[in-house]
Length: 440
Image 1 (cartoon, one colour):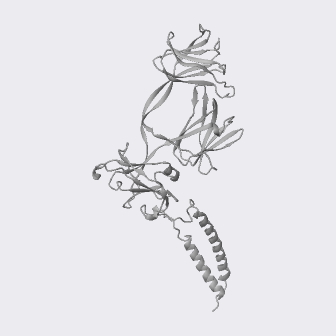
Image 2: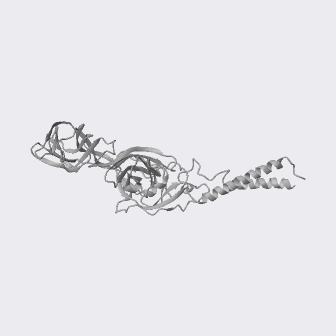
Image 3: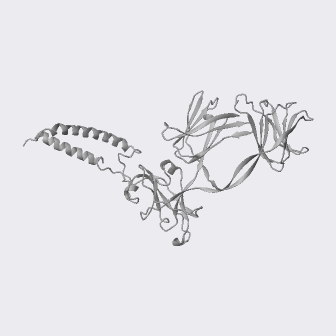
């Protein structure tokens, strides 16, 4: 009789534990769940109330265009798929279709082009300085930059650059003391970006403290033009937390907390008087598995300053900058600024969207596909922007053991482990008692 009761109660305990912890049926959202069900909203961790723009006397049924929600750092840090992992709900509990749209605008981009020409003479000027004259084939185009290749053009020399027609001259660079490049063997070209555009047929290079001009390997002259681009990406600077760094003689690793921001550019500067550093940039979500993003170099040599690293939009929780052979470069020397794309969520400008709305986001599990707003080709007319209120915890959410983003998950995990031990013990007891018949 004792063993029969023990087997009966063991079965009951097993069933109760399986039911309580959702092992038999589960409490997750089914793959075919209703997109508008309240259970769906309870899977999001956060919510933000948003207020539509004022009516301004317009008649609601005749409205056209879209209302926009500008995504900010809060959304980027909590949303994986910006086009799906959120819901927009109005005061009548209607889920509004929405579309993700990157911000673009008409803008100009710079295009640099090398101008044909040749070195026509080397000479000593009446004042004793040495000079090299480079003559352009087409003097109608403005000169914006000059490159000089020559190993014998050493540090300590003082260079001036003039642009003119052979009789009258404009000073483009005035007595610039050249940097010693002995410690930078990878640099073979000195580049001088002029402070403004200069016109002239002849470019004269002058060494102020030398009677002879060292042999040059090449001289290249560039002009810069502006090209109109109708759909140029709108970018903004995003805040970054202070970086962490690890340094060895062979390498400097700088880690940035980038919070899944849609970054496309880093500006990296050093407070050293001159420098040249090669680096690689990688991204990670866990600081263990890193994905290469791009390789680049930053430098400040004479008038040549390259501090911008561009790359395809990358959304990672962490970015790592690896400087090889950093020399005297330290993390304290660096100033790093991050820039990236801007996005709007668009909803149709109608009566449903003119109510107070709520955005639910930060899903603990991948939600079903969101209701989609189909936009006609071209830029939609924006009737106004929503005002975003302070983020808050989702009041509809009941935290469970499956929520890895909360402390209760740890307790839940412990309870599940204990439950597993009890279930195993119960199964063993059932097996031991199954071969015995209960007493009458």
